[in-house]
Amino acid sequence: MNGDAVQNTLATRFTGLDFVNPFVLASAPPTESKRKILKAFESGWGGVVTKTIGLHPVENVAGPRTIFQRASEAKPYVSRAKRPDSVSHSSWNWELISDQPLEQWLPDLEEIKTTWPDRMLIGSIMAGAGGVEEMNNWRKLAVACVNAGCDALELNLSCPHMDRKDMGAHIANDEEIIRSILAAVTSAVDVPIWVKLTPSTSTLTDAAGAAYAAGASAISLCNTFPSLPLMDPETMKFEVEVDGLTTSGGQGGLAILNQALQRVSDISRAYPDRSISGIGGIKGFHEAFNFIVHGAGNLQVCTAAMEEKGSGGIGVQLIRELTTDLSDYLARKGFSSIEEFRGIARERIVEHSKVRRKSEAYNGGYVKSA
Ligand SMILES: Cc1cc2nc3c(=O)[nH]c(=O)nc-3n(C[C@H](O)[C@H](O)[C@H](O)COP(=O)(O)O)c2cc1C
Image 1 (tube, rainbow, N blue to C red):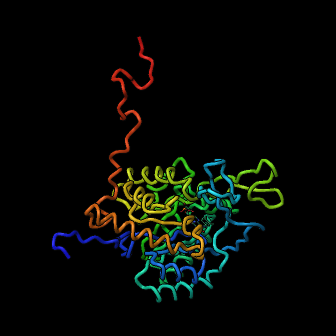
Image 2 (image 1 turned 45 degrees about the horizontal axis):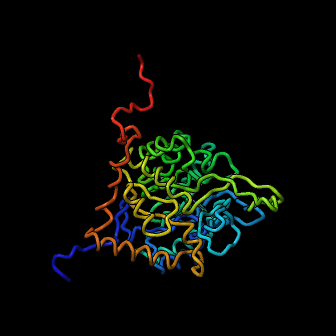
């Protein structure tokens, strides 16, 4: 090797954990089973966040849980309908958390960690918020997952479509509840705690601040954006419905990229010294790059992995491309790691009024008082 060449590395330290690369499969179907997680690590993913594990029984709707919407240039409407020349627009799902019981997850987690000790295994957990019993449930889940080998935990405070009103995104606005859950979990285990928040609150920055102050090592965002499926004008059916009925679900994939970046940037600028795991619409290096420049130190992917045909829904080709493209980029730009450009966009995001106008005379649209 040329003595002057910069040693560049995909290896990333995030919340005190060493990742062989910063790409992680997000909590979702790609991480719903031992089989898929083992295959994901074999394919090169640096880490996985398990499908959210809970203690309460869940039963999914009697129909498809996820659809993939596509747009086409010729007839530019968005639909799940298969059409030639179309490209991915987004995923839409109303899937609940894992229906595999904790007792079944624990030996699986142990085997995964033993098989792949250098890959980061993050257990996503969720309980309710209605009193002492639910706080004990958070503790129980946390202790069990950590004892089974999880390197970190991600608290799911963000699923947009839980039936129970004391779970997921329903409680994401409540700083008191965030503090109670973090107190319960941090008193029970000694691993980094990531808190996954919903983008669908106007008080996201406050919620993130409360979580950091209460001991969260990182904020993960975004979960999917609450949204409705589309209705077909001809059949007058929703593209996902059961007995003619539908409800709010979550949108992921490319369509949420810009909005997810806004949320990551808001938090990153408010808490520049804290860690953020960026999620939402990552499909390749360009999207990952954008999360990094806004401050994310780690990238999570769901929809793009699910969409990859022939990969069993875990993005075999995708992780190859992500690592190769990031590696090429580091070499081309002479960066030793993502840390050298992480957060560089922060100071260039300013208030609207700080952006130069064509005319000096413009005073922000206010009528001058006489
Ligand atoms: C079918 C499906 C199931 C999901 N289940 C979970 C879950 O159990 N826990 C969770 O925290 N996020 C869940 N998510 C959200 C993803 O982890 C991710 O935050 C979201 O899809 C945005 O990333 P993407 O644009 O790469 O898809 C799910 C997403 C999908 C599409």
